Amino acid sequence: MLSNTLFVCASQVPKDLAPSEFRERPQETAVLLATPEFFRVEGAINPHMVDRGGQLNVVDQPRARGQWREIVAVLEDLGLKVHVIPGREGLPDMVFTANQSFPFVDAEGAKKVLLSRMRTKERQGELQYFADWYAKHGFAAIDFDMARDEALEGMGDLLWLPDRYLIFAGVGPRTDRSVVERLPDVLGCPIFALELTNPRFYHLDTAFVPLDQNRALVHPPAFSRESLSLLDSVFDELLVAPREECESGFACNALVLPGQHVLIDDSCVKTGELLGNLGYEIHFVSTSEFRKSGGSVFCMTMMLP
Ligand code: ARG
Image 1 (tube, rainbow, N blue to C red):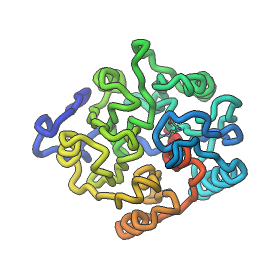
Image 2: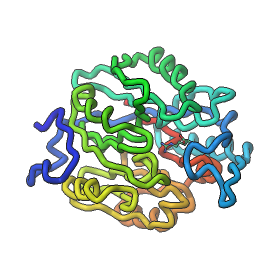
Image 3: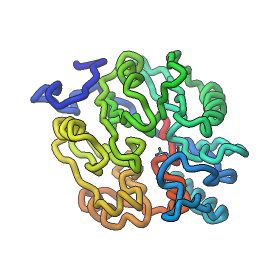
Image 4: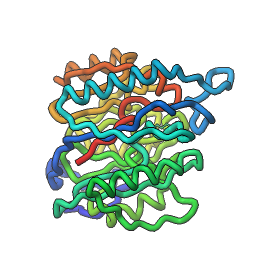
């Protein structure tokens, strides 16, 4: 049903749509991270990377390593198999493993990966290391042609509905609409395209967290009006995350894990309370050093099938 459809506005969505009717998707059991020893802020490729005076943020390296290790420890405690790619000198953003790829298991149970084309030249060099890693781990790379100036930034902009074959795609700053239009056929599932209109929320994963088949956490000012009503037509309930926690704490970069667990930056106390009241177990982690580069916990992880 509705397979391979691209949805861009609410009027396309059938009135009786129930996301639970979409094909079931196996739960992720593993996660991929990259070590942070070469993580720095070397150039501003998003507005979070400079301070109020326009100077590049300065990363406290020992603290960044400690925060990264703490995230790994929580993921392991929760029973996930943690895979790690070594970071590389000269690739200061490689630690954000949500962006270089989109791995999944297809309807026949085969492991596949769609590799990204990064928007900025600063990040292009990361891709080969991820391509190699996936090849070694039995993921077949999808043959997908992109024009030279087209971009696609993996799970930064392509988010699954939990447990279902249905994808939400952010279009604008980092991923092109022309690319997303071709993806329903390539990935074999319906896609809801959401227009990102605010440069501070440059990836979909900075402004939207699908929680389950009925509910999502959102930061509405990140989206066009049309995209917000599209989201409204899919979910029974859109929970608005506290504005200040979205703007400075990356509340909508929380990582939701099977079993009702949420990892979220420790400055997002109100958002934690909101989700805690819904029955989620909240694991606060500190990501202050990574926020200086415009990312938090979701950006630093790649859930694997
Ligand atoms: N400095 C990185 C960039 O601008 C941060 C990436 C954060 N990742 C994310 N999925 N939001 O590309």
